[in-house]
Length: 79
Image (tube, rainbow, N blue to C red; front, top):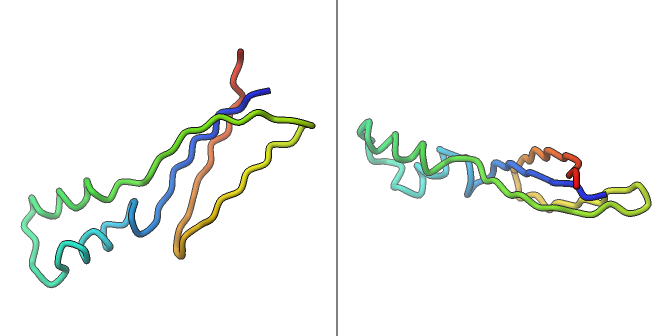
């Protein structure tokens, strides 16, 4: 059958308000508006894909960056 794979991930480019702050110039005191903007920049990454299963096995591989974590939500696609 066919499966949907939704992936949420946190790494230095996605989901890290600290890294967004460093890229913005870390030693400068932030206003409330600037902090809010950085929070919006630092949302987790998200990706959706579909994959067909053969021989009752779903093969998935991920290469993680240092300090990265991923959450995979796998669901059967009813056709």
